[in-house]
Image (cartoon, rainbow, N blue to C red; front, side):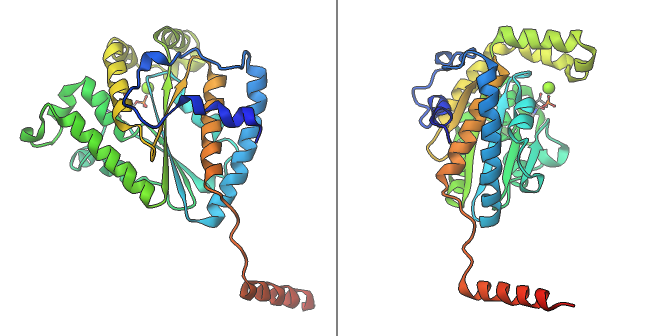
Length: 294
Ligand code: AMP
Ligand code: MG
């Protein structure tokens, strides 16, 4: 892999959140890349690499990869997922989206619905939103907690710290059992979000993407930023790092995400399973019998 590609994501990886400050990451950052051209070329190369790695991941059938995406509206989650995974065999990959929980989901703990969607060994699972919504939207809207089914006695001031603890333990458990977890926060600026919302309102083919609720959530911008920062501070770990990805330039966002995924897959030392002597004999016999067919 070109070294520029390998290094790209490293700057944005947080493995220890204690000192993390969101304001230290500039949503408009594009590193050394000044224009989309070079980035597009690198993205193409990384999509090709990812496809190679994924074949081995699948054949080896030992590791699973879980990619979690979180962001404010219009930060580019959907487009990033679409572009970055474009070269991956659909058989080896599954995207799960998490919206407001159903009655059945509210009947369980907040990790339950996502646990059911975890990738099998050999597969890549993508969470478009995740259990992190339960320390984000639910934190910004405490009425969601009150409207849920938790026993009121358990809704205390300490609930967010308790949830962070549950999440850290859950991710650690996954790591110990062969599911590699990588998390992406696409960090868009408030000004860029406004631009993208206006595009959704002004361009008929983008109208479908707009929801009136998006503007309401935008009004809580600062509360969301605080919730994101606190989430990253408490859940960025070695086992399950956060990548805080500048998201004002889509071409850069996609490249950083692709680079992080490649770096991760590369670290797993994937290879096609070795064929043993007995299997080689079996193959030779099969070939023989095919050749003897009339
Ligand atoms: P979208 O991804 O644009 O279709 O929107 C999905 C919506 O579901 C977002 O506004 C999320 O904040 C919301 N959502 C996801 N998970 C939860 C949750 N656990 N509780 C409440 N709302 C949620
Ligand atoms: Mg939306």
